Length: 126
Image 1 (spheres, rainbow, N blue to C red):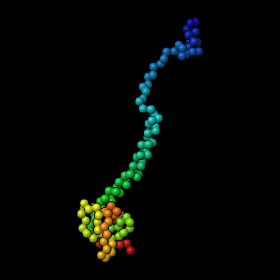
Image 2 (tube, rainbow, N blue to C red; image 1 turned 45 degrees about the vertical axis):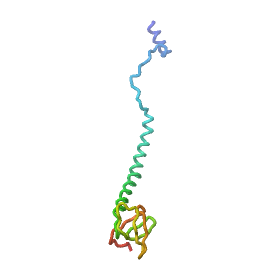
Image 3 (cartoon, rainbow, N blue to C red; image 1 turned 45 degrees about the horizontal axis):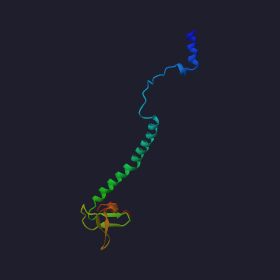
Image 4 (tube, rainbow, N blue to C red; image 1 turned 135 degrees about the horizontal axis):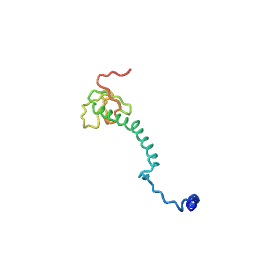
């Protein structure tokens, strides 16, 4: 009868008579909500890198090669739309080049402002 009474008491007030159950699953140091919030941020950064940053770096690299390869006689187009021929030999350390835009009219142009370089003897698109 006492066994029956103990069962009834355990059903009525399980917290009083029940021993604490040890937690067999170790708690993780990282919360799952932290992972679910960081993964989308990493995905957005990866998308931005491959769609915007990397192509821009490639374009800058090509532009730098083009500007470094400028030589005398090349036809150049500046960012302002001026078209002319390089009049004087260009040294690699020069930051400016001399461009002839008409007969006996020469201007100095910063190399970085060149938007297009056409090699010698390239016909215009008329």
